[in-house]
Image 1 (cartoon, rainbow, N blue to C red):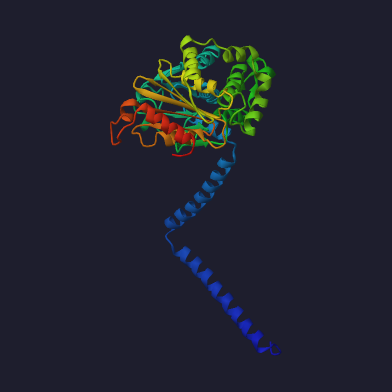
Image 2 (cartoon, rainbow, N blue to C red; image 1 turned 60 degrees about the horizontal axis):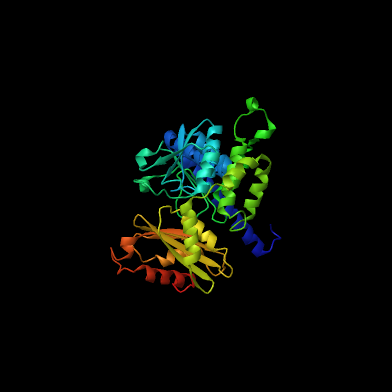
Length: 405
């Protein structure tokens, strides 16, 4: 040390002091811990261990595939209600089928329920051909269990007391803020909610019905009925894989392909059409109003509201038309359905803007398709608005389609 430069010597002395200070701090900490009451010290140690274990559990939980996580949530329940949106379509019904099959794989009883009615001939055929056991609900007291799983929508609606429902799980592809208390999977980039359920089936490792004898099966089985239902659910919400698809839709269909029952699929896809549906389609074609590449039609008073989206689909076949809105009245409510293949027209936003200042009205949807409802009385002036008539409402629709609202 005698030959060290003065600066080095000073640095060495400083390092010694730092080490001594650090040692004193550690010793002080140890002395403080040992001075604590043994009970408090034990509780501190338990808290640290619990925090470490909790963090490990959370990381492990979220690293599991969503399908496995949903299966575990269902396994913790004795029974669940799989709740579809009002007037369920094939996408909603096939999702309910899939979630019920996952519940059954862990010995949880599942009841499939829905508000409203099943009127569309395609929806009725889906239910009948696949022999689905579905129950209708009019109020929250009709729900089969306290544990609710929402499929193809993320906020319960369409029945008395719906606002009080707190689902344990949500599986959906529509925009919205609804969540489940234990599980939420909302993928707005997907074309169908059925696609999400197909991924669950694959993640869980379902046995294919063609691979084993009936008496050897256990756990989740991909039956021809389930595969056909899920495939048709995807087709129905993507206009046969031509509208609003993601890569996931095609991958899901490929996964299902070997188990599809072609006879069941043909019976669902080609049901008989009622006379009133044909009449409404004819009205939409003959009474439409076209401005530029947009078409709007009032089909008047109707008895079958499911004919409105079918009429909108029909108008989309017209040459030169890129976006359409069809509306009609049933029991004092105007029902809207829109379709778009125009990149300038986000149909869900278009309909939402068109009804935005009408009390009690609601509308929305995806870029390519949307829908909505509004009360005739509220449109005419009940509430804070001044009210509008149907002619003014139609002008609003054209303005919204043109991006002027």
